[in-house]
Length: 83
Image (cartoon, rainbow, N blue to C red; front, side, top):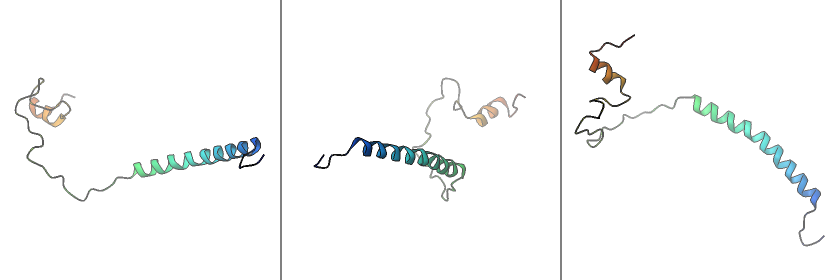
């Protein structure tokens, strides 16, 4: 064979090499992701409250509180949570 043709055996060797590289790289990537996501990243600045954020002109269909705003729901009940 000439002209840059690669034999079948060389292709199989390359395939096995890249399989081993992939098998080694996957745990490394997962480990780095777990380590990175397990550490809190500090935010050094306060969120700017722009005037157009959280503008509500009328109540939601279920009341004045956002659906997942538990503090507002507790205030609506009179500050007492049912336990």
